[in-house]
Structures are given as structure tokens and as C-alpha cells.
Length: 387
Image (cartoon, rainbow, N blue to C red):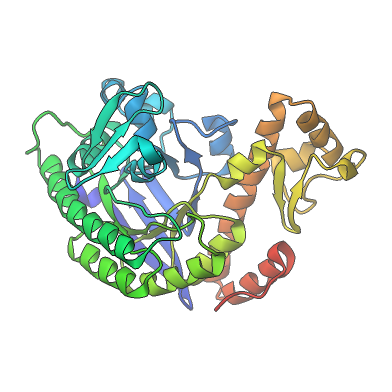
């Protein structure tokens, strides 16, 4: 079933790529944004909502699902697709970033990451091989290799050490993944035959480390490659420079995934640098805090100036929220803490992200991505694109 996964670039406009990603659970048109379903659910919306919005792939969190309800329970339920009633592709992260964020509750050594659960304090070891096993049981279409993520700022010595350890873990991850695929790993039965595995490029913000990490990770022969270790506090322009220093060393014929980023204008800029896949909690998290993303830029719907504003959040948007509700009503829901506020705001923000990606794909196909990029920044972020 290894041939259940594939990727082809079907159009280009400069470095921007329009692609098609084939997985065991369906095709993803790229560039694509993955709504984040941390615990097997995208907060405030249902799977039917995601389907109506046109989402084609979601991300689920290995760390959280491993702790609760457990990967073995999910496997007994038929795998994550069946468990969460999502028939389309799923990507699972390795849990590395979540463990990184635990701070004093975790310790990294060559074997893996030892950590205490944020739920009950129980001790666990997340080794590269165990991250493979967990994701095999979950049955995602794309599994991520375990990596060591560094924060920002970070010394060159720490960035190099984490990058080199990530490469050693990547070799172990790849070897074990292939053993699981071939049925040679005892006690592990994948719930999705044909699962693919992506390697992760690290190296902090040091260009030579990023190049070395990219070249060595590619040599391991993953089905796709991710740019990790960004959106951890570094300035936006520095993030763009790191992408510039990494993407050229990733294969043209395989998907490129920028992990955990970011605002819509960041996605546009990353596409301009050759990235195909994205995820971020921002559209859902910010929605719950009252921020709505519009073509004229973000607005805080709790602001008093919207109390008698009968316009939709975005007059150019055709999502359910904008078709049916006014800014005045959405402000009311937010100020009285109605549960529907999170749902309506999330529907809009996810639609905005997914519709922006659709417009990007169309622009690349028609050779007008450069014009789209300029126009988007003039209205949304009001700045000149970084080249």
C-alpha cells in the first residue's frame, strides 16, 4: 500500500507551487491549510462543519491522544478516522512540540523525551520508535518523525545539538516506520495501510544548520519534509529568512510542510517560498477570543464600535456567519459569553483561511500569484511583500 501516497506539482508561478497530494483517505489540493483538531476535534465546530467549509485534511495531536483516550483504545475503535468520524486525510504530529512546551516537566536524552503528563503527573518516555507506533495505531495518513524543537532565542550550540539529535532520531524513526510497514514490528498493526512519514528539518535560525539538516533528512528517504522549529517567538522576517534557507534544499517532487504557522499573510509569504502544507491553531484560538480575520485585516468583535454595526464581519465573505449574522449580534454573543460566539467566529475564520488557500491555488494556476500576493498585503496586512 506504499503507493497509496503520492504528490505531484501541477502548476508553478515563480517558487509558488500548485500541487496534488494523494493519501489513503483522499486527495488534498495544495497549497492547503489543515485545521487543528488537537484531541481529535477542532474546537467549537463539528466534522459536518469542516466538511461544509471544504476542509480536506485536518491535523491531530499525538501527545494528547496518546495520554487520553490512548492510542490502543483508538486502534480498537478502528483507528482515528472512524473514531472521530472524519473520512478524509489526517496528519498527526509526533508530539515533540507539545513535549517541548512542557518545560520543567520533561527531560531530553538520546533515548527520547521523558516527561510527566500535564493531566496526572504520570511518567512517560516518548522515543522515536514509540512515536511511530502511536501514530501507526492512530492510523493517520501522514505521520511525523519525532524531533527536538528549540525555542527562540537559542544559542548556536543548542541549535546544533538539537538539530543533530533530531537527525539521529530521524534515522531511528525511519527504520522503525519501515519495519512497521513491512509487518516486522511486534505488537503494532497499522490501522491505515499506506501511511506516509515526513521528516522534520531543524537547525534554529542558523542558515548553515538548516541546509545541513535538510540535506541529511532528505537522504533518509521520507515521503515528505517539514520545516520545524519556527513560530516559537522569532520575528516574522527572520522566519521568512529561515524558510528561504531551507526550502531550496527540499525535493521539488515531494510535499513541503511548514509546521505551526501562522497568520494568513505568513501563509501567503511561505507559499511564495515554495511551501505546500500548513497548520496553525490561530484561526480557531483567536476566534474564541473574539478576533475575526477579514480581507481588510483582523478585527476584535468585542470592540464597542460594533455594538450597532449591522454589516457582516466581512462583506466579501460567503461563509455561514457572514451570510446570516451582523457584527452587532456577534459582539453581543461575545460580550455575554454565549457558546455560539466561539462557533460562529470559528466558522468564519476557518472559511477565511480555506478560501484564501483556494484563491492562492487559482492564482498559481493562472500565473497571477504575484498580483494576488501584492493585493492581499495591500488590504490584509498593508505592507510590502518580503522577497
